[in-house]
Figure 1 (cartoon, rainbow, N blue to C red):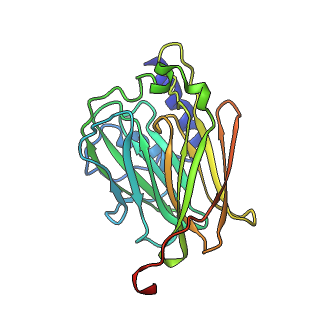
Figure 2: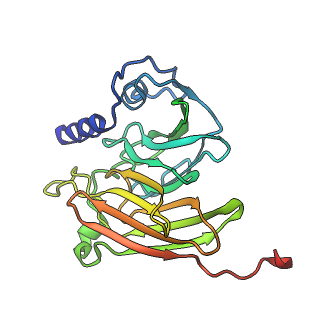
Length: 265
């Protein structure tokens, strides 16, 4: 428990804005951690709950080691930042994403340590935060169980492997699906130190950053991340990531070939 508290303090010192301390709005989910998290993450910025922030996930966690979550704020203009958090996890924040030249959309899998609210928070260009989410029933232990690859003993054999593909979408976006081989150790398992991916960026062929994010150990082992970035039919994308040991991961992606749409569309 002491180790979990120290991890959370370190995360909050990284995320906390200056002047934190404004009174957040009442939480419709009734979470005992809402006030603490809101003050630390949002500081004095205005906050309100907004159902236009679509946070999609199963109501029951069948696998607390890898729980799928989607944050979709494409119906909201001017989104500059997206945070995924689980209130009652020992490491509440999973990702902090900045869709610079991308749709405000992100999907991934996270660990769940117990029944908890799971939320998406998006920040607008005005500085205001919009929040949505819901409760998830989970058996628990997702953050404190050893990764499968650690149990099998083959984690080092595949460390750093990246798979990715890009598909064209309507409205000028390309859908990017990335997966990494990484144990994503939380530091909550005895004799296994914290070790996880901590940063990810997707750039186009000219070096323009389309989206980047900070990543924490509450993201599931072997992270899988889906984004929607600006692009076209000839898009060539580069992926760059880094873990907490300073190891770099890089890959080049090209647009997938697809059959013509019915009717020639």
